[in-house]
Image (cartoon, rainbow, N blue to C red; front, top):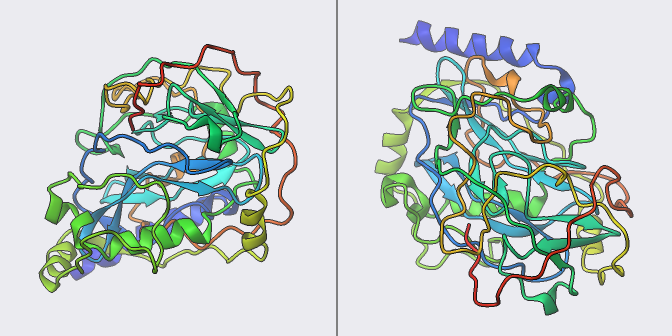
Length: 372
């Protein structure tokens, strides 16, 4: 057993070294898990609490008590014009490892996982940046127009029905990044999760109710309007027990060195920038929405989990640097947080040039509900 674990760690280390530095920064390294995460739960995403908030979908992470759910929530991007690419679990051959999420000028590959809320397995259909103001898709979110400065549009998306939360292995998704996504994996313009995102996941990891061991893969609260903080914890908070920790260790297949991000020098300033009033609507291009995102209107009664589970063919989404590199031995972060906050200089003051102009459509009926 000791020899197997040693070999697992060595293979994981070699796999990490084989990943280019630009892509390696996005790989969560540390623990390989023998069992896959539970399916993505079906839930309703709350509307944005204010202007320029960007949706971070909920996901399964690994904590001291095993797999736990990090609730979906609204967060500020570290800079104007950046989009969130979710992380995903990937089978390495010896276990499941987590590939961390990141910010960037486009949405990259996230395994084809249907997280809902605009992230239906390929790209993002929940909104786009326009002149430093985020424009929300009312077919995906139940938006209060008064709190977002009227920056809305409506566009529906087709969807599938899988809730599978991992790539590869038995029963996993069979997706692969496109050539464009593979190239984006090596881009240097990826930005780490913010301190707010990291703290949100850390607080969730301390609450036993979010662990699959306690909730059977069905968290009671799958999404919250604002991120958790040490001062604002989940209701009915209960700590992880010693029995939970012991049971979780039985699923750990291997451990490697943990890779971390460096704290950003200007993170606090960047977040504050997003409190400014949205700029007047101009002719901006919608963020990577040229191609449909296989999404279904999130505010319809039907669940938003959409991306087809059987993506034998490559997805049509913007690349993430995480896909291919993860087919090696375990290299996953024990801590679910994808890393230390991003550190990027001055906020971007213009909408991404690569987005095609959104199609105008009549706003959906007010009584429609948005579903994650």
